[in-house]
Image (cartoon, rainbow, N blue to C red):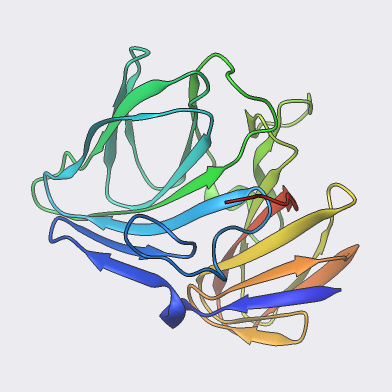
Length: 242
C-alpha cells in the first residue's frame, strides 16, 4: 500500500467575492506541479457561491462532471434543455462529451450555496452529452457505504453512471465506528476525502477536508474519532501528459 496525504490547509484558494473556492488539484490560476490529478480524478473544488450569484453559461467537452451540494440550493441549466434545482443529498452528473454549455447559479437571495464540483477524465471521447441527477438519502449511508457514482458498464445499483471505471461512495460514520473499503477494480486508486469530522485511515489521522490517496491496496479501514462524513473516489490511475 502507498499513501499520499493532502492537508486541507495546503489546498489552493481563490476568493472572487461571489465565489470562495478551495482547490485540491491545480485549477484556474492556482498551479501546484505535485497536485495536477490523482489518476482519472482531475478536479475537486470546494466552492461557496454567494447569494444570487453563480457560474454563468460556459462550455465543457470530454469530461465527466459531478456536483454534490452540501448546503443551500443550486440551479442548473444547460444547452441540452435540462433545468433543475439541486439540494443537499442530491448528486448531479454531466457527461460533457462532444460539447455542452451550462450554468450553475445560486437562486437563493439570502443564503450561500456550498458544493463540491468534481471532474473525472472519461474513458471514451466524444460521447453524446447527457445529464442526470438523483437524491441519495442519508439514512442509506449511516455507518455503511452508499454508492452514488458507478461505471457505465455496471448494470446493478441506483448510482448514476459515468464514462469511466470509477466508483464514488459516501458514508456517515458515528464516532468510534469503523468501516472497511475494498477496491472495486484491480489497479485503481482510492482518494479518500473527509467532508466532515475526524478519522484515521491507513494509520494517518485526518481532519475535516483532509484527503489521502491510496494505491496498491486491496482494502483499508476508516475509523471515526468523531461523527464524520467521508467520500471515497475509486478511480483508474491514469498516467497523463501535460
